[in-house]
Length: 82
Image (tube, one colour):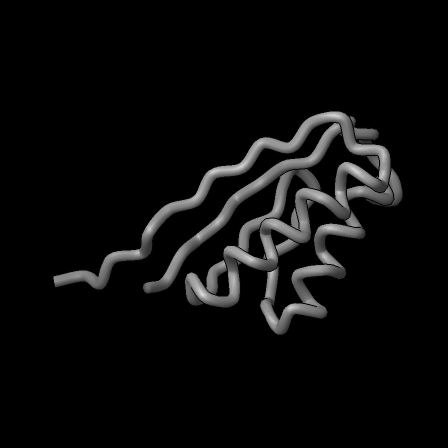
């Protein structure tokens, strides 16, 4: 099963360097072998359920430990077209 996760971490700090909690999330996904699409207003990542769900669990803990005060997360099952 393929999943797509989209999330934002807050507080959002505006222009300039991304906040430490956003960078921590991106780096954790990269270490997990995933390729996140890291953007100024959020991050998205696609992967197998077996890889993505454990990475998201670690991500929540890591981001909260890096001074985020809110995480908004949406997970969608990617269904084949046709």
